[in-house]
Length: 165
Image (cartoon, rainbow, N blue to C red; front, side):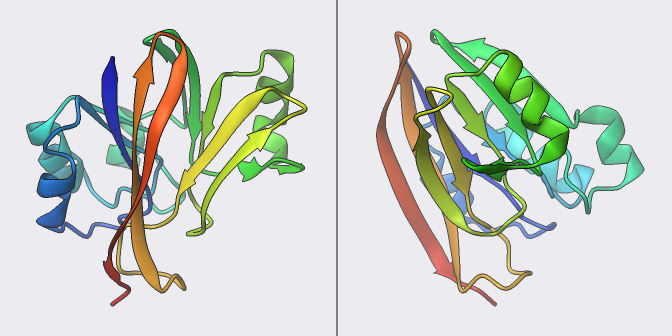
């Protein structure tokens, strides 16, 4: 069993609340637009950290973190990228990976809109944690926590960490 803290679109904004919300997590995952390697290092100092780069991330961040990350944890096949779309409107760059071998869990960011949708066609859960940073059109900063356990995704929590700006 692993408890996961998931966020995206921090845009180089650190918030002390991250430490509190991720204190009981086993890993922190970031779905892109981290903002800097310095910010990534802060997450890495808290917990094991998995991340993909986003469209605002610079060359140094792109050297360390991939555009797409696929792995299995606790029996759950995970595919994570920054720009992914959502069920029925997946981004063309990720469609072939999704449809050739659908994951159990597909994670993306970019839209700044929190969405958790089960894709019946692919048989996979789609998660977008919204935006945890202070830049963009979103009004509320959000993140997700959930548990992976023996092939199951459970105990999903939506956390509002404050107003935008």
